[in-house]
Length: 209
Image 1 (tube, rainbow, N blue to C red):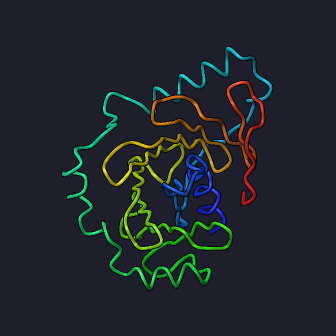
Image 2 (image 1 turned 60 degrees about the vertical axis):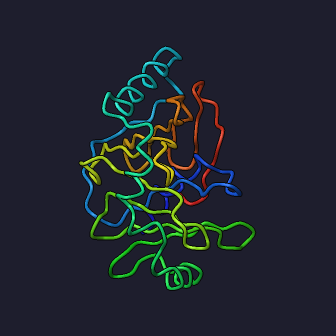
């Protein structure tokens, strides 16, 4: 359970202005993951090597098959059964009471000043998709994982409910991720509880790693 909260925070930090938009996030159940030993050397390598890594993972994330904007009508039709959370009251109460997992779903809430403003659902029948709702149960965001999820490395892309890309993340391991904005610009490299920018300067800290 700790793992999915960490990964959730990774993606969520990409959209910290939660007033107009929900936070981005990823929920991860507890499947067995496969990953090679990863050594974090972002601080120690030179700038040319950091820039090369940024380009490498940017290229992998934003390939020729990347969809930056789905047809709105088609996208919403694909998620027509989820545009409104049919179990909004139940999910709202569960999340408000700190429930993170049921037999059928993984849950996570987003709070502002101790008020639940949005929540995320990952149905166990479809672990490659995460749905984000506002406090009224209206769909706001959809996360899509690459086919090899949950085995590292894997990728995720988040879209607004109108089908427009929000951001993308390359998950190297449980500890390390590369994060990019929707325009392909580099946001930062996460290692454990710290995000570093292009020049290896600490820029963000996460408390739930």
